[in-house]
Length: 177
Image (cartoon, rainbow, N blue to C red; front, side):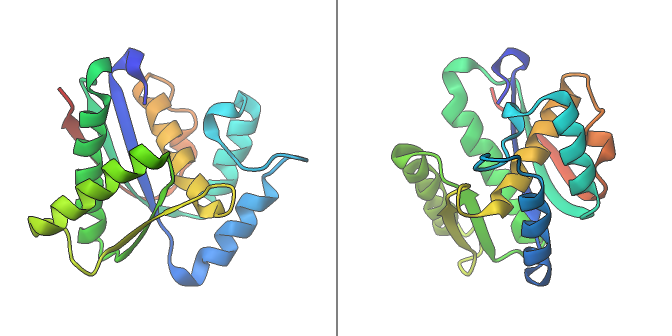
């Protein structure tokens, strides 16, 4: 989320089960001594270049939703709109196992309520399993964080990192107002 630019960016990385171990190994190799996880916002420019280059070698398949017109007082609404579109994109890709980064008890409940509402509306496949994971345990959760961070920077005018990432990217814009 970049409130100053009115942006809310959500990203998903589709990792084939057969490549998950490879992706995790690449991510673990990027950690610095005593660093518990990668987090895009905590990294400096030099490290971001290193991370983007390493991840580019994985040729990621991503789904990205860029929410524009974010109003500070409507961050929850913006997240719901973006998450609804992101889950829809993943369903179109045939994804049936989704692991979202855990936020907090209240935030996770809001996300679960949205997932259940989408299922009730038949806007989400009933066989899509959505669960929440801890980025301190599941390295694959670092990937969407990096993608969302690079997209947000590109939206703010610096596409240095985004231009490094290769792979299949599907992005969509939604208005968050």
